[in-house]
Image 1 (cartoon, one colour):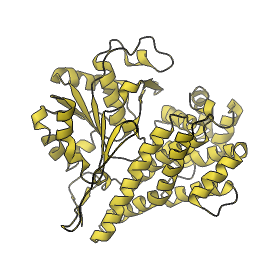
Image 2 (tube, helix red, strand yellow):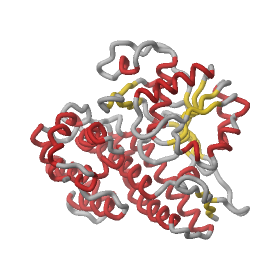
Image 3 (cartoon, one colour):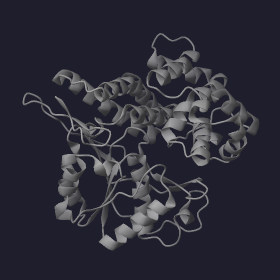
Image 4 (tube, helix red, strand yellow):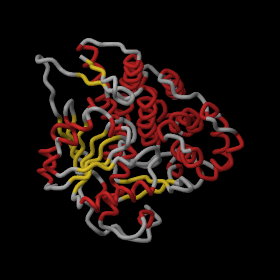
Length: 414
């Protein structure tokens, strides 16, 4: 059954299989070693031992640290002298990284367990980067670095609690400047976590709004990776399968979360179906992060600007911008859009049907229909465009994007 812990922030729900059901952990590498399945988090102690880690810093955000399952996870790491840094919230900024680095050094840690969504994952990677590197974090910005990443980076074990960024299988960390909110990317293959414990049970209590926003983040990664210029059939295949998983599971996850909020109870079969849907989204999220090594596009450039100017949640920004960005791209890649449409609607005959599907899905899961719903006004288009045009994602968009195009896309989304 699904049980509710009423005293937990946002509620927390766990499916507890009966004695006739068994949980299987699957292991696969791409290239990060991933252990996937219900209860995967319980493998953490054995895995840390295998990695030779002795003193653990748990990096998480302040909401996850309050969830009822978190103390048990932390307690299971007592043999590793674990201590928790939970000073992460919102879009991660340099000051959070610096505070986490202080905690790392004070504890004398030799490994990190990152627990949560994209923000604590990115902060954990940035702490690991700076553990043995001097100077300021932004000295190591990808493409503009003034210092080499040439020292060992401590091992990270990642336990995701959302299905959106896929940062747990990514080679980069994205951190914002505290004052300007400008996002900077630090990249190195050593930033890949050594292990991901992908446990869908940890997503069961995720509120509908967060489920929707993070799910649209994953979907945007998958779509833009497939459409990005360049030749990478491996990423294309992963992206298409990931989109199928989103189409199959995201709305079901949001619907279930909405029903849980009303106090509904479920039988074992319904609860198991929801656990499977959460697992589908976990895999789709990781697939998006793997696929977008091919590249991203204009949606992300627009969304990054919204996060910079308005501090908008990244997944929500992607979700609101995605329909307008895809309308902009449609004529430039009709064959690719038709392939996308046939993933979600096998009988589709035109790529426009894929754009229509995005709009319908967004409405069904409660994504705001326009920038106006986020409080954005046309007066802010100029600062948004100024940030978006400098962003590194749109050069790989299937259609070149000019300053005038950015204005038009924001106007369409408005």
